[in-house]
Length: 156
Image (tube, rainbow, N blue to C red; front, top):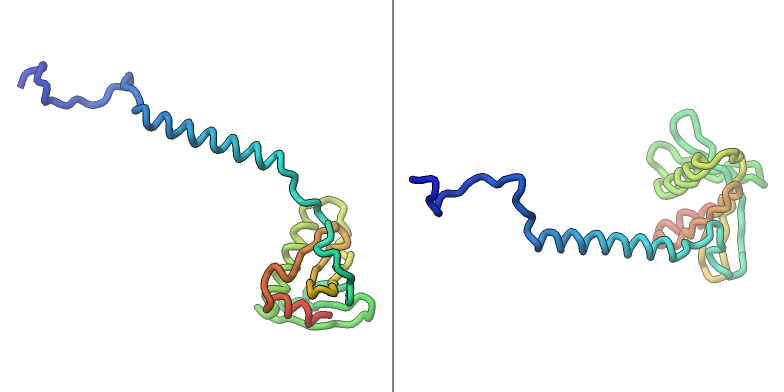
């Protein structure tokens, strides 16, 4: 075989070019990312603490989540100064997840009163919501399905 043999393949050189289809594909991805970023920055997110529903409040209870020594949690009625329910171990899964999400939000902010209660409300249209009175954050409980809404309704 001679050096001028056309069937011989040589390793790619650093000066070789990138196929045009790959360049166009990368350009499309970059443009798409820029469009998504622009849309996300222009569209305003919903205001934190905005009411979940405009329906009349038919029941409301201020509650606290108090940890127990054995890794449980007590849901405490602030007005009645009495426990509503105590969850041990993995009991109260969804309620505990919501409590952790609200506590995480408080932890992200400075100078938040950890002792401030949460307000659980039932609305005339059947919606349930929990509001963190310290941060103003509202979680629409019904958005997580009827079984999870029933768990919170039992606290009222």
